[in-house]
Length: 349
Image (tube, rainbow, N blue to C red; front, side, top):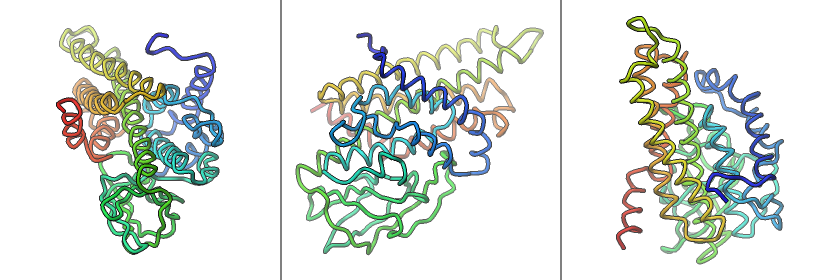
């Protein structure tokens, strides 16, 4: 099978998501972002499509198709709304962690409960039956009905589940992902019991983290593709020195280099997803894909802004949003710099 090829069943699901994006997501993405409105309706639309269980096994109530169709569908969403894509990733992280730990994931799969996964990068600690620590940036944090938390207990990994009403939350107005209801979430003093410890907790947390690395990579690929499409459209319409910008060699070079970076990141993202679906060690490929795809998205959005000139900095054009979202993706999940350090450990061990 070609690296970017889907099965007939996978293609059917991804086509359904693409149609949903074209009909429901693309027309409102800019307005929702400008007003920092939570994409609740679109999130509900994904729930109605039944895609939150795409990567979850059939025995746990999921579809059991793995990460590859998830990646393909996220690209389509990320082309127009990184906020919605990142919310979907968080829902899938929570579902995969709960599945691995043997928890109840019915409401998470159905989408009747918005879930957020809080990773080990936040440094939360479970001590004496209570959590301690602050998660500074959590997508969906302001609206989540459930938090699945990766913490430490006596120096060992532990997975806990916290109802949404328990921790203190403070909505954030960050640079990007303005429609993702990002929040700082203070878990200090919140009572919690371990859902999984030791090897079981480690396995659950690893699955959730890997899904985020690969999912964010796919989102960034979509964002990069969206920025390139907007740059080509504007350059084809804008006349300078008596001809469209698109025939200017300098502009063509910008677009070509951006597409080269995004295409390379896309290949690596799908490769990582296939490795994970085959049960092979996908961490190195997933980290490389995540770093490369976010870098490519930021590059594509930055160059698209330059091609737009002064228009590129205004909210009427999509490219400034792609840039802000790309920069926000850089700092999530521990940040691109810490991931580079982690990748170095894997590659140089």
